[in-house]
Image (cartoon, rainbow, N blue to C red; front, top):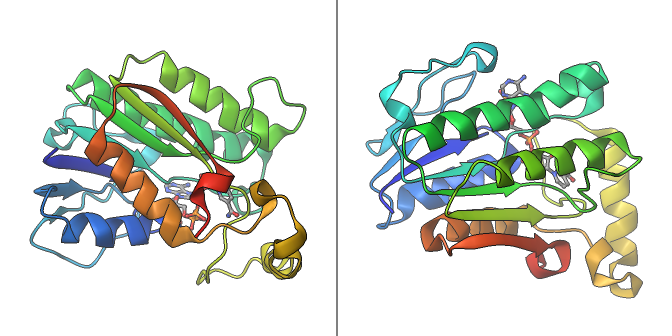
Length: 211
Ligand SMILES: NC(=O)c1ccc[n+]([C@@H]2O[C@H](COP(=O)([O-])OP(=O)(O)OC[C@H]3O[C@@H](n4cnc5c(N)ncnc54)[C@H](OP(=O)(O)O)[C@@H]3O)[C@@H](O)[C@H]2O)c1
């Protein structure tokens, strides 16, 4: 693999993935479309884009693989429709464009419980995206399904912080799938998935992403 497209490179998982990808000798170029600019790096191409109007003809879509860590929360997005646009429509638009330009592998940070038939809107959105991606014909598709992420994020999310504390404290007695997941592990697994590009569809459950 030489050219990697990374979506969500300014986020918690995305930033770590970007650092790993820029340091990897197996990646020659990282194309990271974002809505706010990233610090420059000789291996990085960073188009600042509007995800509602992605340029269909840009050279950046000619990549070997795509790693996607895009996402928001219903609270930050402001509505379910806005959340669905960021967590479903944007990743799918990126996937379609990259696939149309020859990308063979795609790896997604999805979430524990992703299921298109779920009664929970968040899980249903993630499941619908997984399903739509599976229909695009990538040789390799990896769906990481972490539970609650640990780590510090610049943006304050009080509810998540409380959940991290409670689930963190209960960690030793919780079933492994409900334990707090280190973002470094998710980022490493995301990059590994696109570098290995194992043929087929692979689901990585939360318990396999623990430290
Ligand atoms: N938090 C958890 O506990 C948890 C658990 C399981 C799964 N996940 C999933 O894991 C994925 C990555 O999570 P994370 O915590 O790393 O996310 P994050 O820190 O919130 O980063 C999300 C990324 O998406 C971008 N983004 C958000 N809204 C956008 C918009 N309207 N237009 C363009 N870009 C936008 C952000 O760009 P800006 O920097 O410009 O905002 C950022 O690059 C998400 O899909 C999330 O649902 C999270």
